[in-house]
Amino acid sequence: MAGLNFSPGDKVRLRLALKELDGVVLENAQSEVLLLKLDSGYNVGIPKENILAGRVLKKFVEDKKKFFLPKPDKKLKSIGLVVTGGTIASKLDARTGGVAPLTDVSEFANFYPEIFKIANVKKIVVPFMTASESMSSEHWLKIGNSVEELLNDSEIEGVVVTHGTDFLHYTSAVLSFFFVNLNKPVVLTYAQRSVDRASSDANLNLQCAAQMALSNCAEVVLVGHGSTNDDFCFAIRGTKVRKLHTSRRDAFKSVNDKPIAKVFSDKVEFISGYNVKHEGKVRGDFSFNDKVALVKFYPGQDSSILDFYALKYKGIIIEGSGLGHLPVGEQGNDWSLKLKKHIRNGFVVCITSQCIFGRVDPFVYSNGRKLLDAGVVFLEDMLAETAFVKLGWILGHYGWKKNVKEKMLENLAGEINEKLPIM
Ligand code: GLU
Image (cartoon, rainbow, N blue to C red):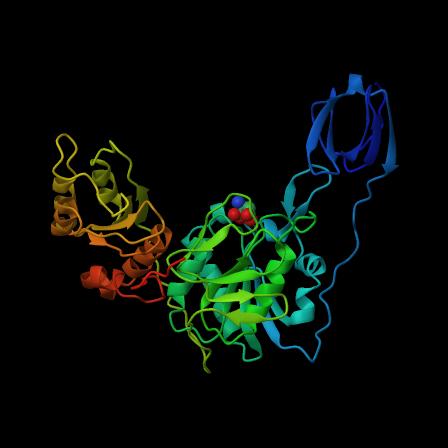
């Protein structure tokens, strides 16, 4: 139908040959097709020639209202908040149908009024706003600095950091090493679905994160949905957590470790041991050497990949087989010569498991012993991502150059578990 006078963001009702459709008009450069976001959340493209009639139910008006931070409630304890981007700091853009970052911190506060009923948010720091795939060690250092500033404010009980989900477990691991002697809780949280969707996980995650930040657990933890329902969260140690689902609200799981606590919007129930809060200031150990790599081994992989990394990098984490093997002594593809050569020249090679759950073990097969002889470091039950940030952090300390292996195998932030829990 020609002459449809709709603008992006308008809520409209369309009459088609067999049905009527309600939805919000989305921006679309392709003028013969009208893009519509349906109430179910799906986007559909409708050729304009198929539209028999249409009318505007609600004209789009840009929301120009001013947002303000709520006034502090003297009866509540205070927390600090670090906002870094991701879905938790985004909202649905009616005109594009996609999720776009919030531009104003007070808008963030406006979206999540519930957290202000649990704690006073004494200070909000926004070191940058970016998706977690765009982060680098520079961003980790900025987050570390923001966290340190808030931890050293004597009125603040704990710190909540909001973050995109995809590479959140790298940040939780790196903060665990930056702050090995933590004085207060540092709680990372996220949203898989933005707050303006009915199925959003943002509010419960934030409320539980605030509860955890008020607790006496002085550890870096990730707090997020414990089930697909909107009922409770788990607090998981920052070095033992991994995103294991693309879209579920309970995407993060505790790996080779029990969660530290079950967290509800009004209470924390501790499940396993943790470091308790202590008085005094904290200083982050913000060292990091970017010349580290994380590589997954696959059958047939050419060992000359080590030549490339040894040329430009100081160390590498390789996700080997289940128990941590690479092909050695096999005909045609023997990694041992290259490993020996580069390790002798000071290149660090560490092994984790492709299996995620469980522990690498060089003593079950003779291949494992050959790798040990070549100088490969077997990282017990450490997650590959945790191992990667730990190696970067250790190599960032010049004084530890001679004992990188010992440091990698020292349990500094709960990253190694001697006894794996039955889960
Ligand atoms: N991929 C983006 C990120 O990790 C956005 C998605 C999210 O927050 O889950 O920041």
